[in-house]
Image 1 (cartoon, rainbow, N blue to C red):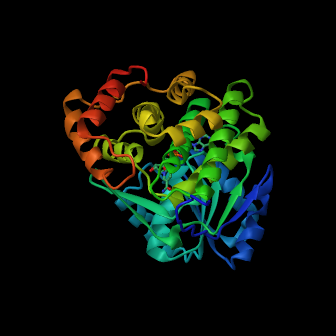
Image 2 (cartoon, rainbow, N blue to C red):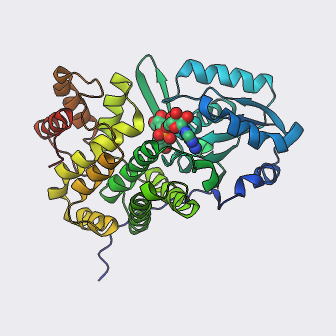
Length: 355
Ligand code: NAD
């Protein structure tokens, strides 16, 4: 008897190129889109890389804007949009991590331009139609099909020099998408399979990375994992973990990937007893009997911050944060009460082992 509940899987069209050296195909990919004046976007630290990728485009490059920063401040996006208009850009190329992908999405939203992504971290934003904008400490997110990049070029050469701590933090951010997809109310056998494979590739890749950070095969594996986990983020509704990161990150302007890495083990430890199916999937994907401890060990191995206190979150803010996050997560399948969320936050605040 078929016991699979009814589901809808709305596959999103996106062309993905993967492999060392494939960034050299940027010009050809832009031509496929019919673009003649591409504007390259990046964070300040990736300007040299973006200019190197822009050089072969010649007159096909309208310019490079190197102002991307985390959580896409509205004023920054407006200034970049004005520049894009002045430069008569007809396509956007996002060279960087989630901050750069976020800036490209904000411009795509405003200007209805196509986006090509060349990701350099493992956040996975390039696989989603989700955008975020921050105004005066408040982060607003939404979904619009037109902000999802039409093409992604995963060239492991571009993330070869990504520092270990940033690599692990953004990978744990990526893993959080797949973890929450496993118990999402709209999970399906399709998202399940993709989430498990994404987690498996991340776990294997991160295990090997400290000994071989320049290894292109490992970097490529992590990029494949980033797409898989980003794709299931695009396809499912996120729960408590993403709500906590949203509420905390927005309120205290915390580093996004590090916050995900810190909280994910605590969320898994808290929810695991209530989700035998997803817990088993996590055990298999990570190859570990205790997924929460395994995730925390990964974060610890890269020296990531262990406590919310170390990130500057005051203890007296925890109760209100717990109430807000529990409230916002209410429509999800697993919705712990406020006291449970507060206990989770208190452990994370003190830097205790996830339990
Ligand atoms: P990031 O893009 O800010 O990058 C982190 C740091 O790494 C930056 O200082 C950057 O300059 C540097 N960096 C990037 N690539 C590098 C490289 N190859 N070598 C050396 N340094 C490099 O951070 P992130 O964690 O990738 O993304 C975080 C942002 O992404 C947040 O704003 C988050 O909300 C967003 N996000 C959005 C989605 C979505 O679907 N919309 C999904 C995940 C994350």
